Every structure is written in structure tokens, then in C-alpha cells.
Figure (tube, rainbow, N blue to C red):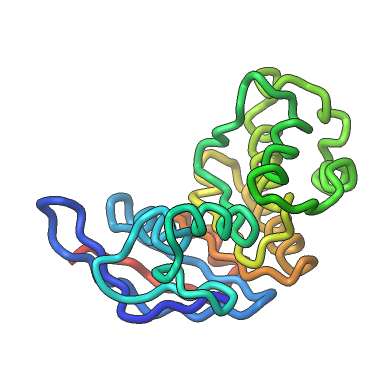
Length: 209
């Protein structure tokens, strides 16, 4: 479902970062560990097609991301890649349900039924709530729901547990793993949080050169 080869990237004026090979099948989970500034978020942006590698290739569900035009990449991402950002990035002018409907719109596909998805994440009663009224935990669950809305082939999560206590961190990882398995998606979690290793044994480490 996800495969990389010889992946490298260089931010302007900085040394080239070489990333380990990645291969994740449908329904499998991978943890990408690394200290702050090690290139974890850069790797996530490469896997999602938000950045273009200096060298190497990213293949998602049999499609080489480098072969897609910018417009085709946007549509492919909307349909096949769900991203849980470190900050929720919800649109304040829209309620919870509308934020999820927007994912359907950009992906140009029907996707999962929003009421059922919200119910599975224990936030059904928040469907018509303003995102400004959500607690941090609720906003994160909405962010996860938005990432799952189009039944993606690949779920990417950036530091999903960084601001959570042990109990809630465990719940969020379990939630991501359960949902990924349910829709047959590959799950990649990028984090510096060593606690997550207790739930996902398959991991790689990213280190700056």
C-alpha cells in the first residue's frame, strides 16, 4: 500500500536527509520515531505528496506520486490519503459535520457516512457544534474523522499523542489502529513519543545527518 525507495530531501541551505526504506501493507501500522528537528514531518510531507523528494520515489496504492501533476496529486491525496495533522486545522466557519463534508467535496467521492463515523469516534453529539467550542481531545477526534472520511488507503498521523496524558494517548493510538484495520488502510504515525512503541512494535527511526 505504501513503499518508498532511496528517498532524500534537502531544505534550502541544509544537509541532505536520507530516509530509511518504508514498506507498509494494507491494514499494517508503522511508527516513525525521531527527535524534534530530525526530519519526521518532512518525511510525512513527502509521503503525502506535499513535498517533492530530491531523489527517490514514493508509491501509494501502486501509484508513483512523482508521475502526478499538481492538480492530479491534489485529487489523489483527497481520495487516497488521510492526514491527521499535529494541529487540527479545522475551518472555524463550518460546524463539525461540514468540516467532514468538505473532505468528501475535495476528494470528489461519497466516502464514509459522517453520522456513523462520528458515532464510532464518540463525538456524534458534536455534529452540529461549532469547532470553536470543542475541547482539545474532541478537536483531535474530529481531525481523525476528517482523515478517515474518504476511506483512504493511507493514513498519516503527525504527533497525534504529543499533548495527551498516558490514558488518552493510548486511546488515540488504539482508535487509529482500529479504524485503519477496519477500512484496510496502511497507518503511519510520526512521533517523538516513545510511549507509542508499546502499541506499535513495527518502527523505524529518522536521524539528521
